[in-house]
Structure formats: C-alpha cells, structure tokens
Length: 414
Image (cartoon, rainbow, N blue to C red; front, top):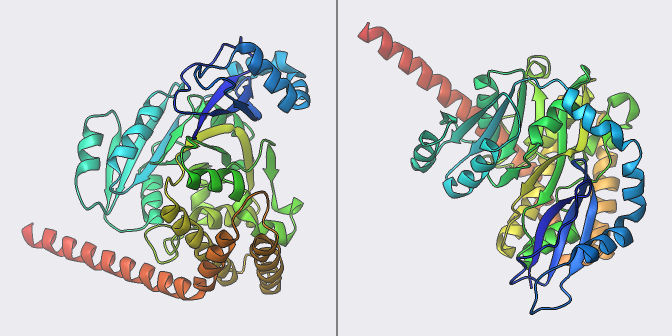
C-alpha cells in the first residue's frame, strides 16, 4: 500500500489527520517554526478507519523525534521575531521546462501562492516541441521566455539574463515550493558573504515501489536537517569534490552578481546534453572552489515528485553515474582541484566507497542492481563528456550563425 506524505507544524496545536483512504501509513515531515526537525512514520491501526488521532501523533513524535524536538524548542521565543524582522529583498524565481505543461501547472500554482511581498516568476521554455507551455503561461501572471538552444543550462543562463532582481532562485517543473520558500531563502542570504543557498528537497509522494527505493533506500534529495555553511577553507579537496552533497538544482538560489565573477552554468552539462546532468553540481563546486560561501538551509523546502516507475528510476540512476563522471572530468579540465586528488576521489570515494560498497554491502534495502546501473552509467561518462563538449560547441556555433543571419536580414530591410 502507498504511504501518504504530509507535513506538521509542531509549534501549533496538533489536530487529528483524516483522509487516509487508500494508504496504510503516513510519512510526516515535522517542523518547528517552519524549520524541519525530522520524519515520523505512523501506521493506520484500523484499516476501516483511516484516521490518526492527535494523541497518536503526539506519541509518535515523542518516540521518534523526542530529543530533536526538545533541542528545537531551545530559544524558540526568538524565532518568530527573527522571521518578522528579516529583510525581504525582491527575488526572481526561474522555472526551466520542456514539454511538461501538466506538471508545470502544479509547480506554478505553488509558486503563485508563496508568502512573500515582491517576487517574479520566469518560465523558460527550452526548445519546446509544442506551444502547451506558452498557452499555460499566458493565462497566469508569469513571464514567459522561449530559449531555443536545447539544454537545461542554456535555459538556466537565459533565466539569469532575464531576471530583474538581485537574488535568482531556481526550482524544477516537477517540484512544488513550500509556502515560505522565499522567506527562508531571504533569511539565508541575510549574511552578505553568502553567494548561494540550497535547501531540503522532500518527496511529494510515496505512491510506488520506485519512489520508495529512491527516497528511502537510495537516499533521495534531502541532504539532511542540519544547516551547513560551506566554504573552501573548511573543506578538504575530497569534500569539495562531493559537491553533490551541497544541494540539488530543484532547490537553489544565487546572488545574480556572482555569475559575473565565476561564469554561468556550463552549457555542456545537464539535461538536454549527452551528459544528462550535473550542471548544478558543477556550479556548486565552482562557486565554493573559487572562495565563495554556500549555505545549505533545511528550512528552504520544496516538494519533489520522484519518478513513479522503475524504468524511469533506472534511467535516472544511470544518468547519475554518467553525469557525475562528466562533472569530474569538467573539474579536471577547469583545474579547480589537483588532478591527483580527482583521480584518488574517483577510485576511492566514488568507485570503491560508494558504488562498489552499494554493490557488495548495500545500505538498508537498496537493491544491488541499482549499483550495477550506476556503475554502467559511470563507465560511459568519458564518451558522454566528449560528446557533450562537441554538442555545446555545435549549438553555440549554430546560434552565432543564426544571429549573424538575422542581423544581415535586418540590415537589408533597413
């Protein structure tokens, strides 16, 4: 039976939860003054009555999160005041999409309901094959931009160029932002040194075996409930290469000015290129490697709809192996880390401690074939890297030729 996913604010009165028809349990994200504390698992004791009482909820929270809740309440009298007094700088929200208007509609519905005074929503339609996204965007108070060059990082860079405000936040079309998402982002940027912010990515649903495997066995996208300040001076080169632990592209924000110092997203990486990913990871790595500060704040929350079917999950895991290899080769090319450190990281940290360990001694209930799939993707990464580099050059050259032709035609008309 599937599990119903929801959240609960512990600082408010706990009410019974109804509406569990078709589910055998609840997976509840418990928060205290909007900050996530942890997950609580509650089973329905009576299948004919899909309801969990307030007393059951209190007991489950006490048993599973007792000490964490106690620690979270320390200093709680100051939290509300901090939220009210924080500066609310205008924010540009960028959603990059391609041919997924149905999912995008739910994403935009959540963004339009955000509790924040001043923000804009920019929909970047990346090389679409139809006008469904355009039709959807014209019905909503959002800005629509069409980016013909295929590739997620082309779309991200276009969103940066179109942004009107000093902070640019990104989320995916298959994610739904928490109502206080932008408030949490603004609070994380309160320190002037912070150049990038990432946050917690929770599962929007646990309806299928594929979603259970990805979230509960493989590890999901959450990255934990502890706030972290990431600086190069506090990291070894090994930890700097594990930039995938810094956050996820579905939930990230940057000061727009930072891109003039470190460059835009790498157009040879991520979805829409032969690499099939890692544009976000490479950006996190490059930003920190060049001496800037990134903050991972679990209060910055979005809810992501994981792949529902195993075939799509297998493709995702395969792409994870391929794209992470492309990312390491990009680090090698850019010389952000010593080549010997990258080689050691590849052999020991990634191949031995991650992939082979998951194959020989998989954590929790992770199927061994997941490690085999990721290993297969890893082995294709050198060829994918070469193809991605060639692809980026081809797209760039085609775009330049197109712009020259447009300018020539415009001059003839004049």
